Image (tube, rainbow, N blue to C red; front, side, top):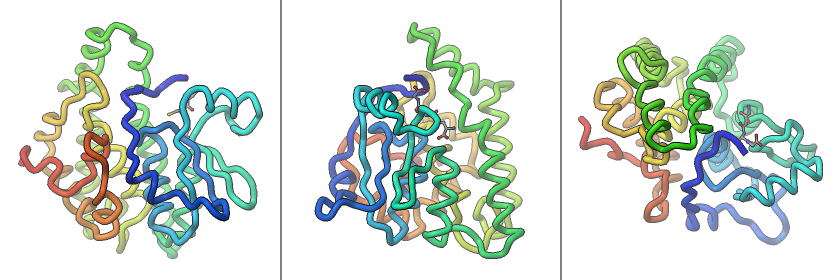
Length: 249
Ligand SMILES: N[C@@H](CCC(=O)N[C@@H](CS)C(=O)NCC(=O)O)C(=O)O
């Protein structure tokens, strides 16, 4: 398994809320017990009217599902639906975004949202080269370099901050309402600073007042606030709560 740093803190309250035991939920999400690549999908599902279950799997179950041919591309997240299995986090997010009314109806606006989802891909892979570094000091150094003055992390955060500042509505893709592009940006940017990744400290965000303002906007959107209101003590999801970074302002 690559790209997953297992300081897994399962969030029992959140998991319990999503479990519909009888009859089985028609939509079944499978991913590791971390926010990671599934978090945006989880939020979109939570904001939809669908009945779904969040299956948090560990390495053994992942291997079994892979061996059984249940993972179309050999990876998670996957979403099992009444119509078949859907893989790829962005494809799942787009699908649920349509259902949950988190995608604009205007074709150009919808394409703009797609542009942001695709444009944020390099940022979503920003740490990918560091997961295989076994030595913790080396891993820490490599990650700090990503966020030094010339690093790609810094360039990406600056770019995202600039894009947000150019939006007249404050939503990242300049949509009238919050869209799946915001859910992806919010989960991706602030999930990075949860403390789960050696070498990535939340203090980095102090250099990005525009991103902190954006955090406030999304975290205080009533549906997002409600979604993250009851996270467990020690959950990695603290970064998604209002005032998570208030000490940096
Ligand atoms: N492009 C895929 C990437 C998914 C991905 O990298 N999944 C990782 C976990 S974050 C995985 O399944 N790794 C296990 C493996 O490669 O064996 C997506 O966005 O869904």
